[in-house]
Image (cartoon, rainbow, N blue to C red; front, side, top):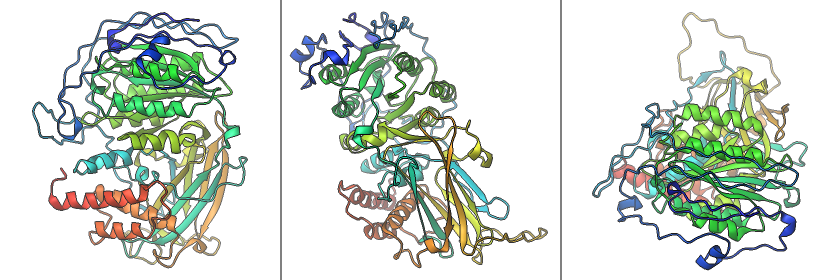
Length: 595
């Protein structure tokens, strides 16, 4: 079935004719370079070269005002999967332009040299660091897992530009979880997680210890990976014009297309002043058609992100395959400024849509107006993950090396709960995970949403604990009665519980194990390599956040020294890069130019 030609000023000159031919009718994979002639043969008209304006310091374009284009015609008719009626998508009017919501937290105020550069308006969640808690009165810690890595790539972007990141941009758990720790895998799919525990002295507090908890997910063999039913939701607004935004997003998604199999399907939606479907569900044998649709996109207009989300979810639902992974992949700078733009309202939208069984992956691009608050609201409430793409190298990691982790979920609503033994531990604090904390009773409540974990992914969490007998952070109560010491097995410091659901499941399952003195190392130098590396990354993140719980005596050089002892094999050079980032942070701090 041939689709009608789509022409919309909001999509800046895109014209395409697409089709959804059944897989059985495709004799071979059709792929290659999306040249003008090759794309024209598939019905994609060439577009004029993109005008980005003069290049300025840091690769950032001058801020411009973009007027919304006229409303697009109705989206093209979309061929229905075999056995289903064709979905009907009504015309989408252009909503009125509204001012940006004031509820977003603006935490960055850097200025760049050069003419016509406006103040940065990057937005980050304003999360207060986890407090030190007393085990006698609050022995249980509960949180949702976080496999996102957006904060690490964003921090790297700031440091590579010669600036320290805003403290709210640093989510320590995402720095820690950027790395692979080589945990032992689970034995089989029936129990999809194995656990790792280690205890070592804290390098920044002489009387405290670091409890390292890791869980490793089962990695699906390629023959067992289900089909993918994807909707690319692509921001083509005027704010996406610079090279680090739409052009980088197009190259990144092309890397994802490389990984597709014949049984996988992709549809595309683009949004600017309004939203429209630009590629019908297309099977994995038609990769050239997907690349032509991507390359035809041009930036221009305002940002109707909420409208785009609704259309992408509508396409995902109408083409839903219960045997596939149904996922919307959003690429944007998050700068929504038309229609629904409040993160709280969009959070409700994606929370409702996740009940339909559609996952959400959010990939952030750009700088200067990057809206991390929006990214987190969408990812955390839409059964999703969030990443930030600062370079093509990061895109290769996400869409090539980590493809299985990004695309194929092995568990939903994964929660961790740790109960500390007051006979052994007097205080604790969880390092990071401030935006992922749960109430104690949420752990057993299967209605409470939590994080998704992909095939072969791992999750790492660190606690700083104060052993009984060490000097506590707070004085004992003058009038309080000393708490009774609970009886427990000898040497048991804490008890670890992991709760998860199978993908699409409604009832959770439980994994549990004790944490004992047998898991302790006599010194940090004697701790396992994964623990030394995780502690180095945690120290780096806390110093970037200027956390007062980290002693000034623990300097940038100490982070480097500790990391150098744990670099391991490092096949992709990620740990070597981390060491250079620590040195860059030290240089910026010493020069006083970080803010």
